[in-house]
Image (cartoon, rainbow, N blue to C red; front, side, top):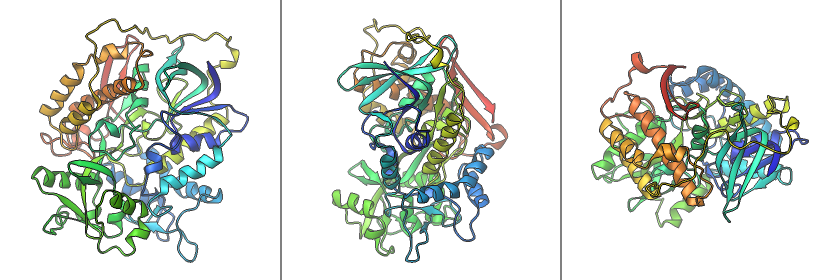
Amino acid sequence: MKKADVLIIGSGVAALQLAKRIRDEKNVIIITKSFLKNGNSNLAQGGVAAAIGEGDHPDSHFADTLEAGRFHNDRTAVLKVTREAPGLIKKLWAEGCRFDTDEEGRLLLGMEGAHSEHRIVHGGGDATGQRIMEHFESAVAGKFTIIENTIVFDLIIDSRGRCIGAKGKRTDGSIESFFADHIVLATGGCGQLYSHTSNAETVTGDGIALAYKAGAEIADMEFIQFHPTLLYLNGKTHGLISEAVRGDGGSLVTEEDIVIMEGVHPMGNLAPRHIVAQTIYDYLREGKQIYLDVSTIENFAERFPTITALCEKNHVDWKKRIPVAPGSHFLMGGVKTDLIGRTSIKGLYAIGEAACTGLHGANRLASNSLLEGLFMGKKLSEWINEGGEKNGMEKRDAEFPENRRPLTEINNRDMRLPEIEDIKRTMMDNAGIVRSEEGLLKQKHWLEGFQIEEWLNTDLGHLTFEELTRVSMLITSWLITDSAMKRTESRGGHFRSDHPCEKNHDWIGRQIIQRRNENNEQIETAVAT
């Protein structure tokens, strides 16, 4: 058993921003499923959006975020984040985190889809996430306890209904309990639920499944962003081709060099991601491969070294054309929180992609993800440093209560788990870019055939690392599918072929909340935000 002031589950930008800003006298433990930098933050290519250029203003960033999010956003969240963005960049720069500059030392600002101004701050060309993660890693080195290769499989809830700890399992099979005043989920999204994805292999919806199992509110799970351009060869995706490539002049074309976005949207190749992704998907369904033509971009290899290396590794001649396809990229929904990171369970917080703050609405604006992680890590650190609301751990004896939720040991031999590849394939087919009632109902019935309720109420400690991941994938897939069935419209990252239009009268400002009650029963409501 280990005790701390703050327990952080996950190790991306949001997690390390939080850890870095916690006062030195506090004891912080970071638990990560793999290695410290093996996650989406380290893969982030595009950059951080901030209105710092001449002629730009946070109000313009605010408006672009609402437009991309199809006005499903929490306006207060959008306003606060966009206003604070320039200061977050300046703070990183002052700390020594170096972004790309011109000959006069001014920040180079890129353009990305659905932005009205050049406002994307980037580092190392297309290695912004890696640059920030390296900065944070050096800042927290030796400051906190970092436990790698440990998967958290249960949250510990006491008799008062507060989250006081978590249970983790190491790769060697050993189990340990961790207790803290503040339990923080920073586990990222769920991109690996789909066969085509830009996400790291570790991103399987673990934190969201943990929170749902514990009884926390989950929101907006139907809104999955599919990035339009992943490198696509022989029916498989092999990595991200950043939005910034199109921002610098890259164009989406067919084999016959027909520009596919002309006449589809006024912004052409820089249209919002859901529109570009759906357009490419329509061509692929007709058996037509789509390419990204980068021939007009000067010094491509210098501007995009990560993408150049990815193409060369996969024997693709980027000087001609890059074959692309859309894949799951970002989850707009997640564990419902306020702008501090507090969930509906006392003592439990969520930040980064695992959280749903309302910032992104129905579709995230490009390069607002690293921004959100920086913002939420800062806000939660301020709350904790100022005292926050403790669990009263210092008043407890050495004996800690076990989880108040009745967990049973598996004694039903009929209980089984789906294979990972089957989850990914069926989610892509039935709950992917284009959805319908028929496909979603088929997917929901298939998932429920694996006895989800039993897995939610079962002690999982005996399962292997891979089996624990499959449980998380099963639960989170069901949350997405169930929520997508209930929203009978198309909005942002949620497209229903049987309801292809936005229905503002029925759905504008309405959010689907999923949670379990004290009796472990499912409650689902659509409520006004």
